[in-house]
Length: 158
Image (tube, rainbow, N blue to C red; front, side, top):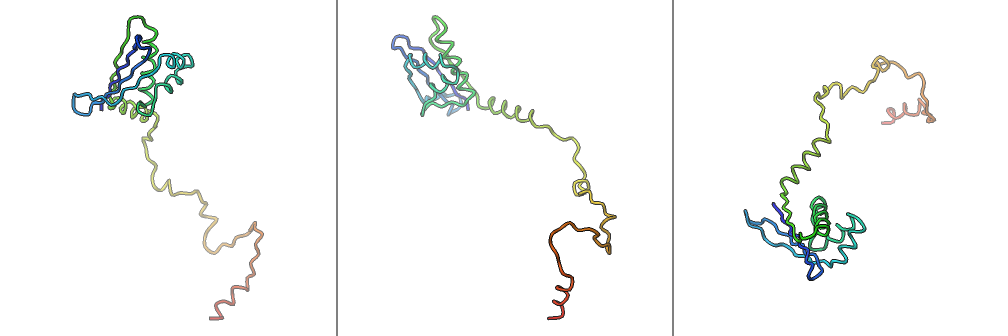
């Protein structure tokens, strides 16, 4: 889905207007939301930094994703810094955004080119010579004591 944001600096009424459009039908942009901001509050947020400006621009009705919000904030700063320029239009394509996110995730993952053999995964590294049948355990480091003749009587009782 494509989205368009119109950002208008209305100096006559001392306000900023942001309109959000979305491509709901192919090649047709529909108005989703229009937010109006007081010029003083936007200028104040601009002095506090980018994050404060993004927070001031986001509302219950207009809450663009982080990447879009950053670009909108940059555009607002440019509009208030430029003489004579009062409007700007930004167009975003979600497919580009998702593709970029997917490529970043793929770059972060390192693939193993050779998978280990199943026998290697199952080998726990035991020394089989120590555990042959019939060998007694020579030393037990435990505090439990088991009496040998206690369990011998169980078979006889049945």
